[in-house]
Image 1 (tube, rainbow, N blue to C red):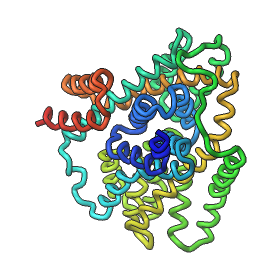
Image 2 (image 1 turned 180 degrees about the horizontal axis):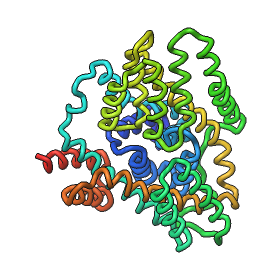
Image 3 (image 1 turned 135 degrees about the vertical axis):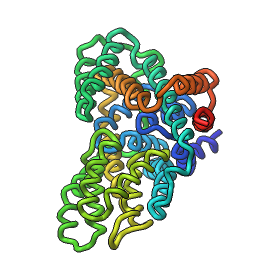
Length: 401
């Protein structure tokens, strides 16, 4: 038993788990959170529902790609710094490689898969997110007050869509949680913790490094005559200052790479289209841009450089925030606030289930039927999520044939 536990906590084990998720997690960041919940809360029990929701709430506060940050935090908790690296590499590698290969050839990559298969992969995201919303709501919205927070949060972000509204909703929900009577969530105890194998001092050092790079890279890039440092600066800032996930970073990246002449606008749009067709985080679009860049840094070197630069802030912020977050969230008053925040997180997922997940995937009755079958397969048949993903891809192909 000891050997199996040790193996399960090794960086290699973490890498393999996230590699499989990186190969099968279609549907964008909200769907990724659903896949993570199914894998690590339901199947592997690395953490409980409350800890997972707390972690998602933290990553919603931080700039950068929330789903990738959740993955890094899970890897960090499981196997230390090497685990965080393993989680990021495993989840990011498949889409990054595909996009670099596409950039190098600029072939008809978008047509390599039939359109029906790609649409089926969008449909399965509906089932994955619906499963996550249902499971989290049952645990984190145990009374009428929390259900109301969930519903109002969903309404606000749907009626006033913006990344800042999502952050504002979480803040308001925390205030509401403080004002509400304390709720004991079934199955979760105050002593339940999320293991963080680094101390507060180390966290402070990571945060200091984050701000040093954010402030110093523009000056270094200006002083340097090399294109590489200018690209590192551009992509590091993009990863540091963007709230709301991958789609929000696209205008900022376009403003950085197109006017500078690194990537043409047509190439940029072609890469964006390809990024929608691959699994994993949308921030791997940076690998395509780096590989497509014109100048002294391009190809595999450019792709790897830009990929590391855009994700580096996420690691620094997660490693810096987690030690403090774990101490704060065990405080009773903070737990009251988190009871409201967790309900709001469910509301954000519920809103995303409608838009953009359902509105972009469920175009007719056949799509709804396929999504319903996928949901039944996940919830009642308890099939592995990767198998349901493959089945929906084939189903979408058959339905369009």
